[in-house]
Image (cartoon, rainbow, N blue to C red; front, side):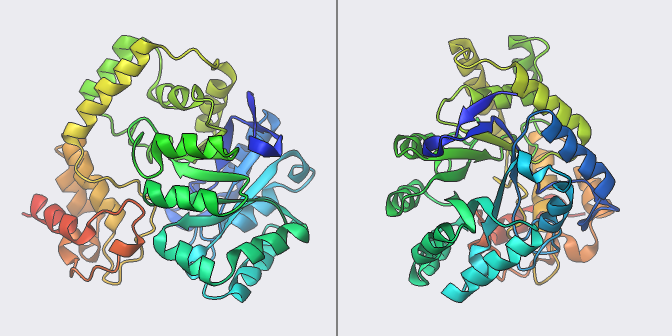
Length: 383
């Protein structure tokens, strides 16, 4: 396993981080983690050198306003000496904070849920303009300073979903140790993007990358023309390898988080982390990625990563699934997308049930005009 110095902390962190947002579940119920399979994955990862584990208050919950099962499960997985082998990251649910007391309450609850005396890396979760202003108003800096002083957290950071200008504002506002951004070869200039990555690194922040495969779209969702371009350029190199290699060959990237859901994915990603070499990215590879992006951008309809922040819809519409099926139609030219729309979604879950209330719009990190796109999906799959 390759390790990188984690910003000004000086810690050696594995280049591959384990994101605990997509652990295997039982009977497609997101709240019921398959303990046996997930435990095997986590222990295999630790035994083979992964030492950065990322979770959050709502992971594996029915909705993001509730606590999920990811934190308590991770506490179980890190028993028997495993906790001492890893750095643990979790996040303050910023959108649920209404006061300074709420911040203290959530931190204490998370320490208990994770069964730990301290959290190594604590993030303000999913910052945008609204949540950032609210946290500032409620004294978030005093909260972080007190939590560090008392030893409840070791290092402070934030995850981000908004525009570059706000990202820089947040970076400059506090003595952060790290940040977490959405970043991959398709979204090189989206949200914080490459400019934000370099800006944070110049300020000595470690940068954790999330969505390296764009919710799987850069693997399963690639158009055949794009897939062929990659395979013809370097025969035998997988789509996952392309995406990770592009990230790991950027020195500003400290950790690449992967939301793995099978043991095979853990093994594949660890093999890639073991085998890559810094500074080997070529001009031909850069040109190949540019070519692939042109192909994808011509076909993709909706910029959705299936993060789930828009859910639940008060009318029951499954917003991410509708967008996924829409993108299947456009990106994959998938003739069965319409059949799955009617076969896999209940009537209430379909885009046709959207009443255009707009409550989802302010929650969307990708700033998708969801009601308008729901109209499009409904028309696309109409009988």
